[in-house]
Length: 293
Ligand SMILES: [Zn+2]
View 1 (cartoon, rainbow, N blue to C red):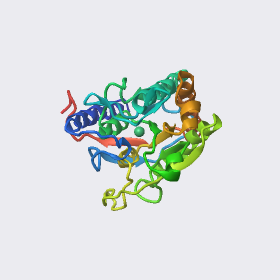
View 2: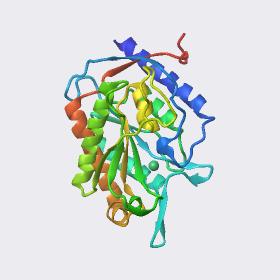
View 3: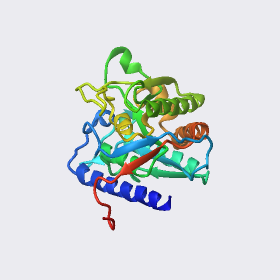
View 4: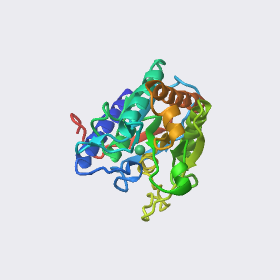
């Protein structure tokens, strides 16, 4: 069993290494939620349906938080909005939200929490973030974002929180169901602090990308890669920067970022305490890990 765990860890490192190498050539753009190659580096896997409810049955709960966007080519890549002479950047806000979520979760020693990066001054390719979450056997992978709409008319007035989650009824359906349930639990917590709940936003691939079983892939990169890896993963959008009440009530002060981060953490805890650890992901090495042959 110990050797098996070692193999998993080594495999994870190898996978991350692969992702790091392949990610070097990938550029990011403003539309991070939907960007990235069709799939992150593939891994061979089987999902063993051994999921005991209750925390602590088999080690720590592993949570990977992904602060959306980050500086690329000298500029913040997320959305931004100017209000009363202050420019608000999604990149900086998501970093704060993720940090507060991590801080809250780590008050519980049973949680092991990783961020995909530690500064808004850098960005990490999307597929590399998902590969990292898979490599550490994440029980939950949450990409944290802030919304903005550049459209006209009623669209312009959109407000509230939403989640880009994987669709159910196709590839890795059990994982998709679990991801949706986790996302709903977090949205419920955000709603409890006053943020409107827009619910789940599901969107199919617009360019014919298919999962390995031939079913239609999800459009947004984070849920798509998560489904591909068989991990629970999705995006949470924390209100609209360009909606005055969302901005002033939820997205403009340190206390507000802390409230959002803690609401996410409470949703994560509520979900994981009910659902237990994720189905174990068994990976086979795709490249030799250092020190292994
Ligand atoms: Zn974003």
